[in-house]
Image (tube, rainbow, N blue to C red; front, side, top):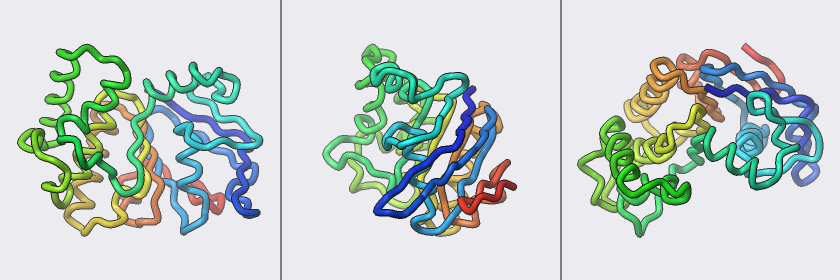
Length: 217
């Protein structure tokens, strides 16, 4: 399990203060909805936590480790083991099969071939995409793409899942499918979940809501 502590985080883009002495505590096993409109900083916050964006000042702790004080190699290794990141748009490599897309994190991590095959098939079964493994992304529809991306993020069994606008382009039934799957991992397996979103449909699933205006509920 993993938690996050953020202290006095600052981030400016194009002269706009997205994060101004921002503080946040995420306990292990929580389902946190980070809400806000466009240019509120919610996606930027998620990218900073995931290590994709730098910040001029402030501290981001993953459990007891201050990410800024780690070497680039140690920070990358810690984030790879701890976080499964699902970017906005649910991107899949179009020239790879679904099996190959799901397996990518394991390939980069040097997972043994037999273990990688078994793990890929296990998460595909859990997410209900086993029958799609030899297909390519263009053959998928509806929540199949989203479920494939979640399977890829879970391949290395990280204790934390970060999702950026996961329901933004989904209709009601598909949005519910994705959120119920994520909630299941949070409740049954103790995963820590952070979702950056402006979609009010996420709120009933969250244990904590953080409004980027500064309110925590």
